[in-house]
Image 1 (tube, helix red, strand yellow):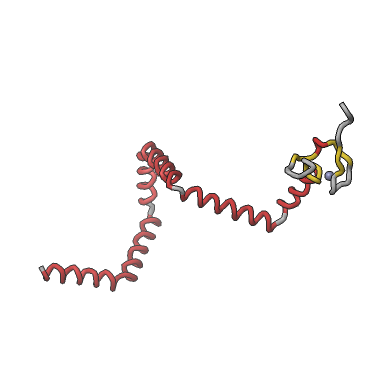
Image 2 (cartoon, rainbow, N blue to C red; image 1 turned 90 degrees about the vertical axis):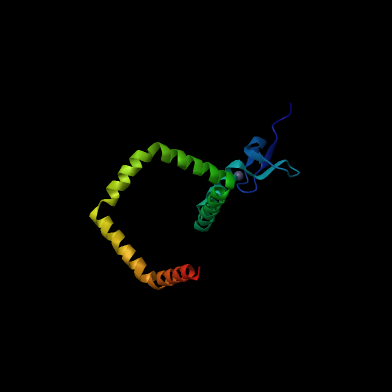
Length: 137
Ligand SMILES: [Zn+2]
């Protein structure tokens, strides 16, 4: 056995044993920077705000893409259905309690009235159309 092979890191200029470098597809067979320097650089890189933001955006995109897959959607729906079936009684009680709250009742009433006021013309028009259709028969 000859002496241990070493290489000089291009970043810290330290002569290190080859196992201090990551293997790579280059002629030398290892990265030009030692593991320590690569790690330091990566940590610095990932600490940058714009990189952090990009990573978060990528994750969000991946997350959305993942949950949009038909097989994932189907699995989630099945899980939800199962969860609902198991907790149905409890959910009903909770919903009833929630709906019975005076402020919830008030809010719902106000919302209905507002919705009706906004859609009054459309509802009347629809009714008129239905009536005419009936009379047409
Ligand atoms: Zn180094």
